[in-house]
Image 1 (cartoon, rainbow, N blue to C red):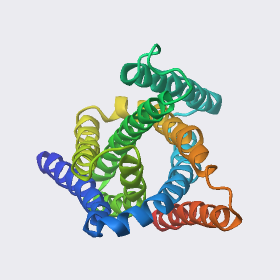
Image 2 (image 1 turned 180 degrees about the vertical axis):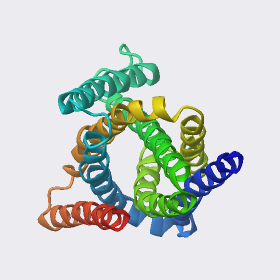
Image 3 (image 1 turned 135 degrees about the vertical axis):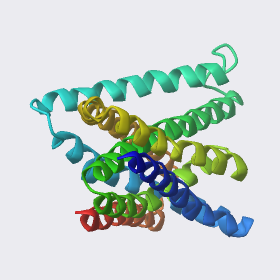
Image 4 (image 1 turned 30 degrees about the horizontal axis):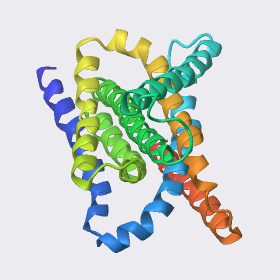
Length: 264
């Protein structure tokens, strides 16, 4: 039993770091190539976020042990959406005082900058919450059986890579430098270790909280995709651009669906 905490720490850390580093291979592209693929990656990110929410996170929250009233979970999602709306407002207010950022003239640039910064911070928050829950799930698997824990860790890594690619693209789109995007993504990924350690020492309490933590993670991804990212796609109205955006969103959903099916 004493060795289990070591197994949990090693595999939660490995899962978080490997998924981020795989996504960070994006940095190896030339600057011109990154500029060309960033916009399509945002569409892909929308698909991975919505896919992770409706195919992976919400079903897992609703089917978690101890959930007797599904309405409590869906209510947590609704309250989470409202909370993220207010949180984004607070971040925008902090970056852009109301008397300087009225929505007209050159002040539109300040509003756009503040809005993008808020989006990046919400992505990191949602990613951190989701990764922490992944740590709880990995720990629970190791406590049941070491082999099951290893298999679960591999599945989590495979599931996280496409989502981390999308998160990384959103951070770059939000104005983060490559170095900062990588740094903050690694920090968010290490919350997997926190979730694993907390679950090891208090699994019963952690398991009871998992459905509601998952609900908050789901609401963050829904809010970011629908309120922050999709409106930006409407700036391009050409038929070819729309078709490309729809295809990439469906591709993101499809990748998540395939990895989720492989996990089960």
